[in-house]
Amino acid sequence: MNWDYRPHERVGLSLKGMDSSQQKLVYALLMSGLSYPGNIKALKIMSLEKTLGELEGPSSRFNRDPDLYYVTIFGTPSTTVPWAWRVEGHHLSINFVIVDEQEVAGTPNFFGANPARVLQGPLWV
Image 1 (tube, rainbow, N blue to C red):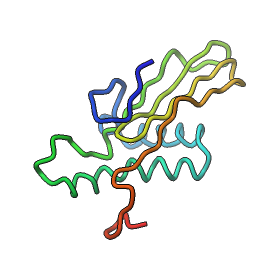
Image 2 (cartoon, one colour):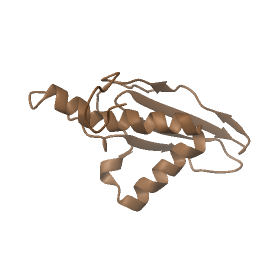
Image 3 (tube, rainbow, N blue to C red):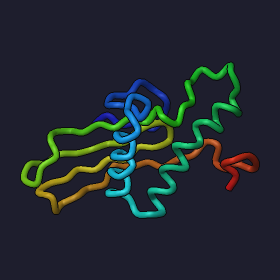
């Protein structure tokens, strides 16, 4: 019931608080729920935090960090009992509920971008 793509304090474990093997598992979890283009879009949105931080400069009131995306697991992953997972941060909220391993609901989800276009630099598209 509590999801938001705007900057605020989040629950769960951040990518920043994980080691590289744990981060790889998060990226695998994202790939398990999203199409290839959806996964690429999610990763690009996450990477835009660095660019946004550079645009806002040191006076920004937000900590723009691509590793401040949080993973939350609701319940215990199971083939018989409903459970859910979320990956969420600034301009990205991905939520999945799994019931009996065969019924999957991927909602609510939000994919946004700020900046919407990068015209120069390493993330130019």
